[in-house]
Length: 488
Image 1 (cartoon, one colour):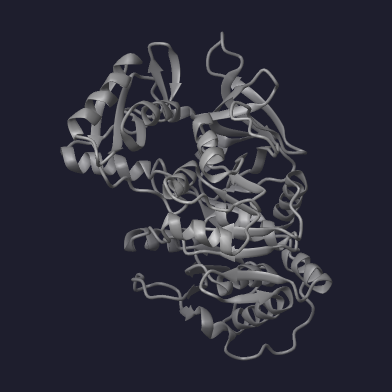
Image 2: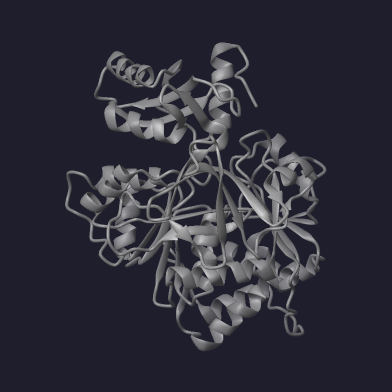
């Protein structure tokens, strides 16, 4: 399946660059297939066969890309041990996934009863023995983690055949070609990196550029130019960082960036306009989930900040209204013939999310007059404002526009309970007095009939993919106050 798709592309363009890292490593498609074969042989020497699970604790590298594809060739599945997992989380992840082997490229503490560990470079030290042609494995090839907003992240699995069909459908919808250069600033542990960068590039015969996820925005901007990137996906916060890094200096030359995608969070019209004015790019909105794949997009070549997204070919949509008098506002419900297999060992989550042939996203969408859809936030983050239901990200957008803040994260005091009390973490503009920042934020809250706690902080935690880490914020609130923050 996935290995054969890569091999077919390598046969057509063996000398075309497949993967490049910003520190100077590069391989062609022919070299990548050879590395995948060597890695698969190394897995075989360590007893990995179809149906086994391989855990990985790896930094972005050509070798990590090869490992993912080697696991797919073997018919096994891989599961990342996320960089933000502490020792207890790692033990939980190992218990839930039951890997036969751990592949690592750096030291981290593991429980005493962990499976055997091997260094990534040890898998490829010797040439592979002759092996029969790779089989077309269609079974589960990976287990990724959800955000963990209500506890330890849930494990979610995809089959190779469904994943390959879903990726190819999305590539056709977005107009990606083998001439594109994908710039990836995300860790390969998450779907934002693999699905929107790695597999998008390699399944279309394009080039994948792997950057350091911890590099400064100004460095990443320079690398986008140096590598002549034509496609990337980032969160709204990342585009804001690029805008701040470029403001006041010479305009970056991002003229080749024809597909600057944005998914994974609410994108405001103001953010789109800033990217156009400062960076000279027109962000293309996309929407999907780790569980479902890509569902919506807007590939328009002109700035349409107020316009929403349309379904990807093969995806059905409807809204489950939040209120009888607002049929245009509700939870987004999707349908597709190629989605994940759902959550492992979480019957409650599967029952809530996968209902018959429908996928209930848990996200609020608004249908625009032209039939497009705008994503406004999570159903569990709707606030009872004086003017009606107010998604928390919309409140954050308003605070960012009206107050001297760098970032705002609003959390309903009781997630899932429709109320007017909010917990608000604010990263203030360091050039402005804290009292002024607090006063302006509280004025916005009062204007909506909301009340709650405003905390000024210069350290808002983020998940490995770059979203605000809301469970960590709630935990911090509990620690600072000595009381338990309300949970759903």
